[in-house]
Length: 186
Image (cartoon, rainbow, N blue to C red; front, side):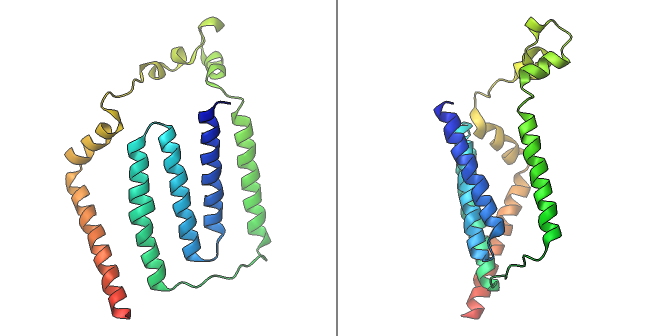
């Protein structure tokens, strides 16, 4: 196991643990803060995938702007902590069964490497059974010399400029509405 794989597993474990803590907290503010932690872990995974721009947008937009908006709504609504009801054993039984099934699927998925799939679905001799022969698109996939930003910005600012601007006005209206609602309560 090399260092990048180890760092990936650290970020992945962090993301899963904070996501579980997000959905199991009874306090809405604590749940939102655990969601922010999940967003930071996902940004770390994006950095490992050499998508630094996506990681920065993840932190700025989701962990920053959207979570501040969530916290505004939670605090304006003054949501109280919900008491736990552990008496719903059928729901816990179903959730446990689904979790066990998903875990078994993950264990079984390790058996299907690209090389094995190439051998099973290839009509060529075993020496030529490599993923690029079975899946030609894998051999043709070349990184864009402009990087990730160019591939995202081009359709965003050419084909979707008006929806992009409408979204910015909608977010501005939401912030103004939150300020007006907060001002009335003071």
